[in-house]
Length: 75
Image (cartoon, rainbow, N blue to C red; front, side, top):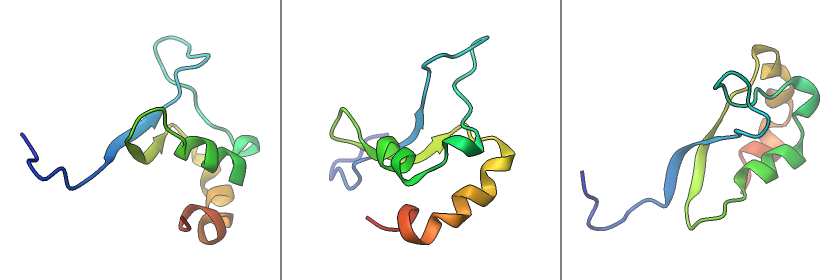
C-alpha cells in the first residue's frame, strides 16, 4: 500500500535486539523503566519516530503508569 501524501512519520515498534537470547528481543524490567528510558526509546536514527516499544515484562505496568502523565504523554 502506498501513502502518496506521506501523512505519518511513524513506524510501529522499536525493538531492542541488544543482548537478545534465543531469537527474542530484550525484555525491559521494572528497574529499567524511567524517564531516561522513554527518551532513549524516542530517539531514532532515521526520520521516523516510533509509536510503540516492545517488550516490557508484565510487572512494568505500574512503573510505566507512574510516569505516563509526566513523561509518556508529553512531547
